Image 1 (cartoon, rainbow, N blue to C red):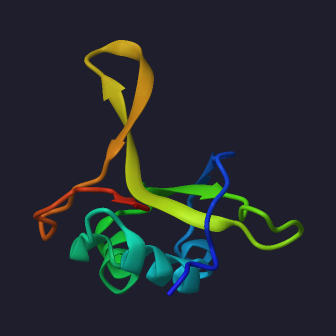
Image 2 (image 1 turned 135 degrees about the horizontal axis):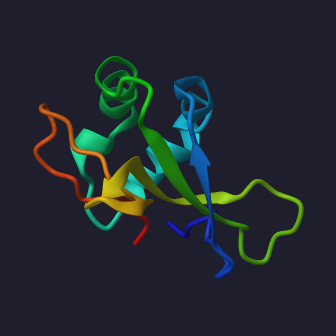
Length: 115
């Protein structure tokens, strides 16, 4: 079966701060789970969204990596990656970084990246 949603090489990322906005990605997210390099069950939407809501204390964002569909114009973009991130201070330096979020019930932090 040929893939209908092949991404172009024009990737862009966006931070999603609300669980409701992240839930709007569920159909594309489930497709990403099917074609991911590593199918991390802890980053499945049915596991990650409740974890963000109840364990994230409002501090977790999703980094969504997207690209337009190859050979198709004016269509929805292809979801190519999902990474839950939190902002952290860097050892007393006045700057912040993003790092992959790992909560107590998450045993694997491998990001979902499209193969």
